[in-house]
Length: 313
Picture 1 (cartoon, one colour):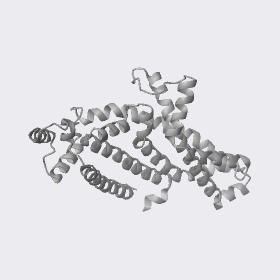
Picture 2 (cartoon, helix red, strand yellow):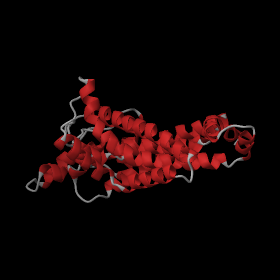
Picture 3 (cartoon, one colour):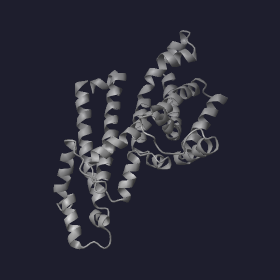
Picture 4 (cartoon, helix red, strand yellow):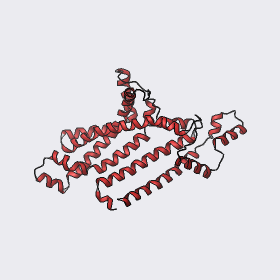
């Protein structure tokens, strides 16, 4: 088990190094000078050069990359070019929106997908199964931003049960959770559809195993075989999807956060791109990549906990 964990940790470290190089180089080759953008068209070359030196943009690529990576390792993400405050403060402020939103959406997705997938597997080949599969296919096909606008139209504009956007802060937890409800539903629908289909396929594959047929021969009903034996062994592919979904919900909610005017990490990246605030874009993107890789690492460890065969690798 220790050897397996160490090999996964080494893979995580190498992935982070490769990701940091790609992110830094891709953002650095984007046309445009942040200093010139901030000062405007009438700025003199001397003023632009002075601002570049102040922002630390006058060094070489290698020097700036090492300074950026070294700062992140110690918790220093640099200073925003636009807001002139530490990037870590911006991240912490926005993380309290994006992280609860991702957890909320993942919770809704899991609560919907597990029973739906199990019901579809237990009723394979029936009208119920066909109806569930058709509904999940529709959920995958519908873009989440279109569904988000539909939710706003129905529940905010017509029924006025929720606000159309904005976030009141966590001083009033009830109001904060209510503000995140529609965005979480919009994010959860396609993820629940994907997870339900994976759950159904995994359970059906497990039900085809010999030990399940033996259990059925001993008198267990299909429902009992699913709940007692098939469910645990079907969780391995489901864990993968759940881990990837959390990463996607945390890193991929840029459009939803803009639809609902939520001050999260996705909206921060969008603002950083439009304002040429490269240090914000680099640092937040790297943080999200780290979250994705870390979740993948934890999913691999969960694999070993569920499937003892992996511990011997």
